[in-house]
Image (cartoon, rainbow, N blue to C red):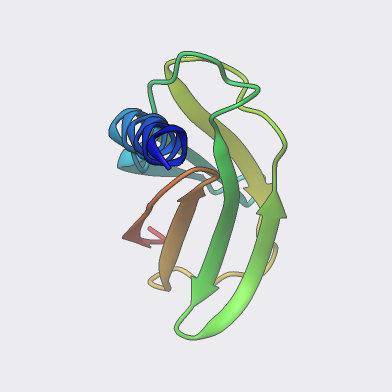
Length: 115
């Protein structure tokens, strides 16, 4: 019985430590390349190992209409997430919602108005 209690305590500690290190992306920024109709998105997401801890998905929405859903299996750098997507035909003044989801825990969302 004592071994089970110790094993359970160890499992809880490992889980808690993992959650303490996990965090959602933050400080999402976006820019618009009007000539090519490309949305550039970046976010601070400092990780120890970008193969094990990364931004899992990026969703771009116009209101509640999903324009883009991209999924990832790693992050290009240990400091930040960065990607660009083509959004042909999006009108000036359109307010896009950008959602980034961490593969371990949490998400972040921001809005960006197409200039």
